[in-house]
Length: 215
Image (tube, rainbow, N blue to C red):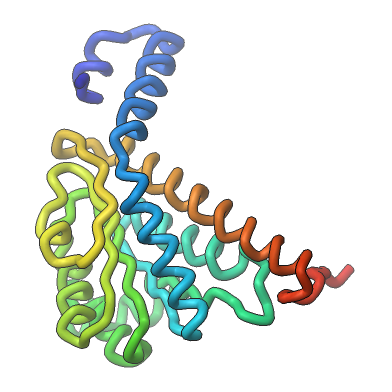
């Protein structure tokens, strides 16, 4: 399979590059494991049934993906009677900078989990390299605590692929952050679409109250 680097070198015309990039991402998407994604969805549904919290976390672009996931799962599904309790650990600047300053950047997510995580909660760690120390430490802590940890990775999966009990992996050469993060966002929207369909069916069957917004 092509790498992003070779595509960049071969295609200097913007139109050709755009076409080659989209084809490349499409090929990567075809290599995703749909059963792993299905298991991820089931874990989210199980957490909902048990009123457990799902914590999303990551750095940089993956931090933005964590926030996006928490939005789409927790708010975008529009479930209110039995909501998906989703939270991103990347959104409180005061907490993150305090922990980074006082305890070290590698403790940024662990310290939050020590305060917020309860038995049965789920940690979703997002990292292209799979080797970000703060993400690895969070997953290690969750597993030692007896909680489930799900990883979304790229490159060769890094340490996260070994630590998590479920991994959705985007196999790419090291350093291809863009395509990996593209696929992680596709997974986000795929998951959100499926969960949203379930809530709509529940609403049609009277299991969820009608959704309304204040004008």
